[in-house]
View (spheres, helix red, strand yellow):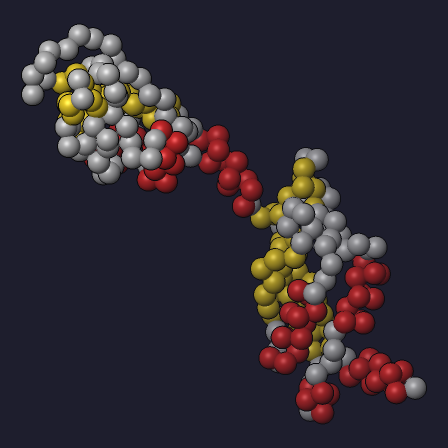
Length: 247
């Protein structure tokens, strides 16, 4: 994750010539759309190098460049870097920035020096990875509201045995894998092991119709947990259910 950079303006005297690089001007150069837009552009375009990530490298890269009179970026150099590909990444991306609004002195565009620190921090990256992480086993496994008995009662009432499968005497157990999200909702339900397309699809439909579960817990925090649930289709059960419905 690339943190929002700070803008450092160097103060110095300047000479009034067309080729002189100004350190301070009446109106400093500006990224199109302003500083917040620049933060957004940097965050979207600067990538954390794999080498730096693998070696847990963090810190600030101080880059210096010239905003030309036409707004283009030129002479990008690193004043202080942290290595592991971070310096090169900053240089390459700064060169790709869109043209800025140039600095103005006495109403005229001038060449202006600009220093920009870009911070590399693994904290947010690690947080995002943890947010996406899926656990198989946790200290407190997720639970259907009301427990296992309520779960199978729900499936018994909501899973409909396809008529064609009954007609053809098809029985099987369909294994559905899904994720219980941190808010208890069900996502990414898929067939882990199936036998018949009709039964597979019906089992999948019923799983997706489940209410929110009590989420899994790990170290006192809710986490995403992968869960596999068997849904059994038995003809005797289906016939009994049909008899009850016909009464």
